[in-house]
Amino acid sequence: MSGVAARPRTPVTDALRAVQAPVHERLEQVLGEMERIVSSDLPMVEQVSGHLLRMRGKMFRPTLTLLASDLEGESEPRAVTLAAVIELMHLATLVHDDSVDHSATRRGLPTVNSMFSHQVSVIMGDFLYSRALRALVGIRDLDVLRVVTDVSSELSMGEMRQLAAIDALSFGEREYELLIRAKTASLLSAACESGALCGAARHRAPLARFGDRLGMAFQVIDDILDYTEDESVTGKPWGNDLREHKVTLPLIGALPAMSPAARRQVDALFGDDQPHDDAIQNVIRIVGEAGGIDYARRSSERYAQEAEDALASVPPSPASGALLDALAYVTDRRW
Image 1 (spheres, rainbow, N blue to C red):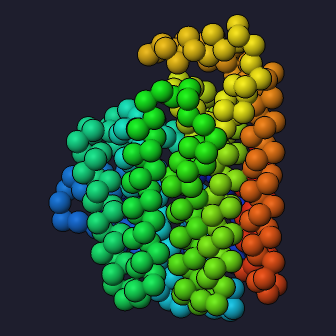
Image 2: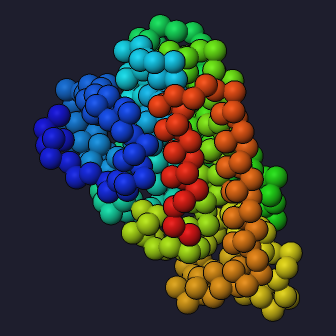
């Protein structure tokens, strides 16, 4: 794939570098496997695939897969292919998300839908899914296949849950939990569970639980960061969730404590198709003053503790230690 060798890397913090250290060499192999899986003789596919691989993130999900496979020593070679499949499925969800949301940039680069078209974006997301699943079949393990294909259904259901929310401000905490489990936690859980099946199968259940709780904490913190940090931290424009009228846990937690006047300002923002930055900044202030960010932070801490508890039955090892470091990396991101 021409030009891919020169792709820019997403900055990796020292904390994440420490998490990835036990599997660093195989992560490089994962990148090569991703290129092999999506390789095509159709020039447009090659062009879009090359752009997507330049957009790749910090390889957090394949890191989890490789670490889970290493819990009892060196994992099976197929773990590299599985890790590539997991990351390609993640990329596919991002391509579809950007198309649905009409996002123009991600991680400082133009999205597929802005650089090419929405039609290309939808088809390319489908292409990534299909190539990933074809590579998955090549692993020839029914349990692994079942785990990963089940999560592909969950990811789609998560998108439908979000689109089905007609009255955004009636979106409650239960609906939010179901949404983030489908859109985020399901893939992290599958990354850990399927990884365990490639070398540490007896730890499958606690690893699935760990990934699920880690994913829930990850998404809640991500949603907090949208209220508190800029694009240099989140990889997307500041206040993007409010700009796109997405209700996340900080707002859900704040709504019951708002004054009528504050609630009217929130209603006005959600009634405006193109809210001004001043309106977004004002609602962010309201959410903070009403305790919404603290409410969401407590929720993330609860999920993180449940993730740590899930690893209690896993024997100490460099891989299990790195998984705990991965949890610390997620929870210690800037607020």
